[in-house]
Length: 575
Image 1: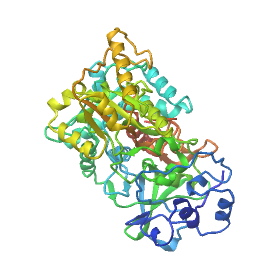
Image 2: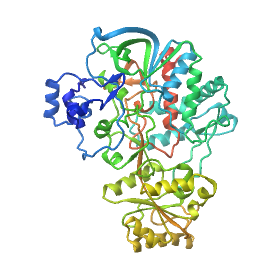
Image 3: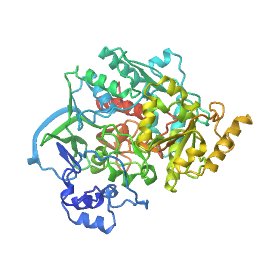
Image 4: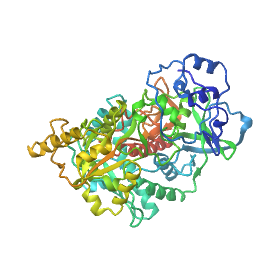
């Protein structure tokens, strides 16, 4: 497969941007996306009918999938990648290091700390003010604390479940590495937290029983925070803050923020020897004698890339939950530019069902009660899914209803949300905020509620009556969608609620293909010497959707692959 160039004309046509409107549209304060000069390449793209530049990113011999066009409502983050020849005369300085890490999320942080601890000379670049860190927990197998607590995890079962979730459209190497090495990585993680001296601890995350045919695999890891650190469930914000503090203790680790990498450096088919970055308005070349790790995340903040590489039904009606807008696919494009291979399209996404048209629902208000006990109906007043399915599957079911022109609502009653209203001080205020946005409706009868949301009252009443009948008859399983009744509850009246719901995008999880040593592969399946990838810029792990029923693999693989990549660079896997 040949390498590619995107012209400015191709890009602006695909993005729908013209004239003065282009100013600042995709510009980072210290790095803008640059393009090859218009020429034969752009005419060829036009002849192929490719309006979106990322449709050409796999080269001239790629097949373009006939996907329905759809607007992408997601955020537009700053793009750092530059697709042009950067002349030697533009390089203001050259620096040397052993290991260069691009991206300072958890994968980049873990790689940085591992390299620093091993005594390597490390430079870590992050284009934003800090790396993406909004996550809850991670997965691991065989960590010391798990062994001490007699937590038994069957590695073969975990591998098999991850393979199955990917429909076996993966080479086993990366998944084997995650399962076999994540425990060691978790021990190192705890060592780094201990080095910070604040009292952070890893411990077991208790999972609820699963009644939908999926095994509950006890590999989920949570954090015990120092008292007073935070009340949020997004522990990653504070874990990464602690790890960044630890990183500052290493004299051999140079972490640079607001310093985007724009290109990888590779001579022909040889080794990746470093990268070109921007510091302010100046280009710098950083040579890395041991290797380069891409840890740049996905591309959920790049609407054109989403349109080119993701199923439209996965994003067109979604809300977006993206607390860091740096995920614009820079690493994907840098890798493709020098001949890397990538997961087949369309790419998998991390999409969940627990959203309103604005964003994620407020977890403390709607979970675990209302969102777990509710039924989900479409604008015909009918149920269409097992509401206790894994969140990615409910999300897909909702997307299908919306694509068919229907709205979707969680229906619950006073008893189902009672625990939040009793225990969570912010609950009533959140309900009022959702009412003001037009997402939440409440009434004293189902008939009145149906009128408020535009559903036929008889249909909604009939759906609730049928659902309650399953409990009255003592059925263990809902005969319509096989929902388990034992951990659910019938409607008992009082106030009835309807919450408008749709899918939410958290991240894309398809990327550059890697092997079990986390080396990036070329289109012939050969390792590109000197180039490694972790986290959501890496591929060969998921297909379809992120499997929420196997929790922790996203952050777990990012941290594990960052750790393993550095080991490979320094030791080649040999102790």
